[in-house]
Structure formats: structure tokens, C-alpha cells
Length: 88
Image (tube, rainbow, N blue to C red):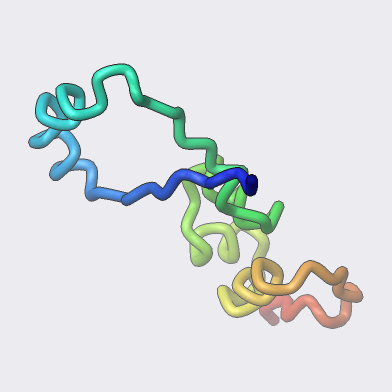
């Protein structure tokens, strides 16, 4: 028998806070913690999310364009330093 992966819904934090009591009553012990690593395979995206940075914020810190960060997330290949879209 194949193992079944649980399905999660993401809620805006305000909606979650408004519904927290109802959610807690519904779950009643059937809670499995959300593990971000199970859903984000890109190490760049995972590190960025854990640092609470947007792609644009990370790009500014690295002095590159946001598109480069997006490309890093979607491809797992290494880029040569001359390909990294440094801002002039």
C-alpha cells in the first residue's frame, strides 16, 4: 500500500487567528506539524523563506536582479559568476 501524503491548506494569518478555536476543535489530536522542507525542494527558496525574505529583498542584498533569484529557485544548476546578472 502506498503511503498517503497529507494535504494542507494555507490560510492568511488573520483568517487562521479568527478561526483558530474552530480549527483546534476540528483537529482534536489529529494534528501533524507542517514541515516546510516537505513542500519546498529548492534550497535557495527554503533558506530565503526561513530568513523571512522576499525574492526582491534577497536580490537587493545580493545586488542582483529579482529574476536571477527566481531562476536560482527554479533551476538547481550552478551559474558561472559572469552569468549571475550582477547589477552595474
